[in-house]
Image (tube, rainbow, N blue to C red; front, top):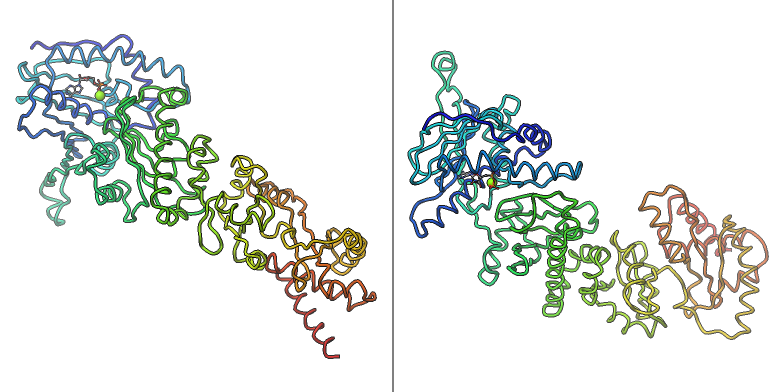
Length: 620
Ligand code: ADP
Ligand code: MG
């Protein structure tokens, strides 16, 4: 063939600089693009000659000394006409599409895969050579330095297949490096459908100093290394996968020794093509700081991690792989966000996850309860983010009690509603600190549930609003004393109101806290002098403020509930003014505080001093 020269297309002049600039951050994708072109060429060849015994493979050779990377395949190859058509002219249509996207979406980012795959080589190379041969045609060599002007001549390849040789530009030398290339190959090509090998040619380090001075350094050629030894398990039919395989795959892909809790295998062909495996990892309470990892593949080629546009945000707490070969990845992210197809995909994934949870709940309740500790932040978060998900899983939501049992909301209500006199859930946000308040309920035979995760603060409000239970409310163990109150006659109540006023003044003076609200109520247990309660809504509001970093201090709504039936309280009402009465009031206040939370440093000191004095009084 005679030497031929030409320009790829008039548009290419506009395109190449843009490609180089635009893709700057994602330069390493050229490796993915060239390897997947090799795989594609092999797939085509396999279709032409099915059943052939040939060992198909793509080999990536890094020659550190020459500053070259070679992508070699024994696929279908190209004739001169095909190079003309697929390399020289296709750039044209691909480029136009690229430009359209580029103009429409200045900052959105483009996922890759826009039919400019081959040309991505020019992001890093200052010379790209194609040596190719198709079965029946003469070999062809194609060379270009800038992706715009090229030469074509007779090639040197004797066997069918293609070599793409990149001479790496000086400023991109990091890519002519064994470790860098291996890292990129592992990232993108670990599950490609054709064996991919990495071969390295490098200068051997001189063995001794004399050798370093004298001889030229020896060249070392490393054994080809298989990049994708593991099969893409997600493509196997779920019924043919064993538990062991799922676990091993999880270990391999996420480089961990830990086992996942359980997993969901996604496998549909219609109405869209979606395969994947989602794993529930062991999670911890502060879900906000944790990141899951969902790898998106397109036909076994890795595309990106955690694509928010495709995978519902709350599912990002999971780990797994998702393969959607038909996803329009050649478009901008903002387009994906509004795409109906993508919405359906994402709804499907959500539903499968919900199905898994309800399935476990219905058939393996005790196992499901065991998982709850690990999965509840995820499930709750999902409920708040996605109404459909909530509808599907709401009957599987569990409440863990301080006794370590688990109940659904309706189980809790039917067991405790009578004693609580309404659709109320009593919870603790800190079983240790609130143990005294918890004990009040436990002695009444009322279940207290533990809601101590960061997410629970939002979750209780969410449930009150969305659970569909009329009049449902959550109250922390220290939110009110109503449960312990005793029936009283109208007369007694009036008497209490009058006494309440007296006690309020007395406590304000004794504790030095003028803001302190005092309430006098008859409680069932006469031995309990009083308790400190904090308005549920007000407390939630101020805690919310703390979480979202508001620095103004919201007033805290504490009320000291005194027991009208208690001997000490009655006694206070009859005692004369004086140190003794003030000490008793202050002591009572401290005891009430202690049943809500441990005293702070200064408070403890005061409490201990006063306790000593009170004991002295007893000696008199
Ligand atoms: P795409 O892969 O999306 O078609 P590319 O720019 O990656 O776009 O490749 C353009 C075309 O060049 C391919 O469709 C194919 O026909 C041809 N081609 C590229 N690499 C090879 C190869 N290694 N072997 C055979 N044909 C190839
Ligand atoms: Mg391609």
